Image (cartoon, rainbow, N blue to C red; front, top):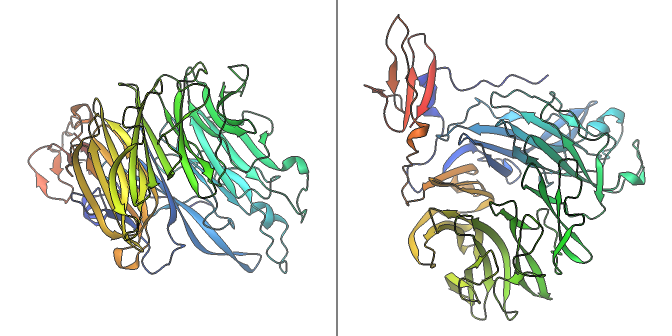
Length: 536
């Protein structure tokens, strides 16, 4: 049985012991992995809720005994941070309790429309059902999906929704469109050891899960036999855009919730396609009008790449013409590792990417209009550069639109092996730098999630270096470059009415008593002993 997870609402004494968002340029550790090695607290993912909370998931290696035999196991854990970065559960939630595949297998994390977390995993529950005491490890993994609310309740059952007829599906993911969740998994070939060897179970499958946990289709929908999974974003009127690839090139469908084609046929938006092995191979940003901007890496030659960019309108028309455009309008250099963001107000698309120019490593930007005009130099705008023969390269993180026409850009400055820093910058519409901040010196961050929002930019990642407090780190910076973020008044302190037996008391995040509610975080202890946190 799942154990109950206590919310941290009991009293003021516990609050200073738990983490919150940083107040300077040093990231905060919310989960310590010191002494546990690289396979502990690895592959973190993060999603933001509409009420400015943060769900964070990660994987941790361990052992599980099944029928008296010790098995290697990788557990998936979940924690919720409130607006102030304080973990809401006294211990992270252990999502599943079965033998699981290795830590690098792909899993999914999304936020549902009600603020709950959606987590997808693969585990060995089908294997455990037929495994005898003396049987060797056979490793059959079935896809499963869970929904967990902000109080830690498992809404789709303590063991989630699983598809045990699929027994070699270590790669799972999910997307939320409206109130529906689309569960995607890739089932590889099966060897018939105690499980179905039906060849129709091989390939990419999709199942729609309704908000109450009922299934949208009688069986998962077979989608493709290609290893690379489709990617989904919401479009207009409850529909979605699904990005895929075909022999003709990169492909996009517009589908309703039952997966009926709304354009009649899918649209090939570029005759090039991504040919690598990344699970989420296309970088996609909604354009605010039901369409999307998309970027991906294309091969130019044996050791050379470029970044392909296209804008797809909600009606299926292509803003950049029948094929996309290269972010750097040349094939003479090597460009790789792209990201993308849009500003619906100005109808502009920003692409960030890495380059290896003839004599330097560079971090590059390119900006397009929705109609495919180059808004920076056609070769791209270099915002950081190092000598090719005497330096480590940079590492792209991502970008996002802020204000009316500005952009936040994040990258890693790599000084040596396992020695990097985050660089966060704000640029104006012309590509002029407004401010820059260096975050976390001599770190080795992996599995980085970032969010660029109206007031602030957030980073969540895994620090691997033993001398740098390894574990899950969080960081927040205001989009004005400060570390003290003020939220709008409409998120303000609620009026607290004391009961007849006494007055309410107010405290700051460190437990110091205040004369009244303050701007920022206020802890309110009512006369009946209950404690609430309010923010304005």
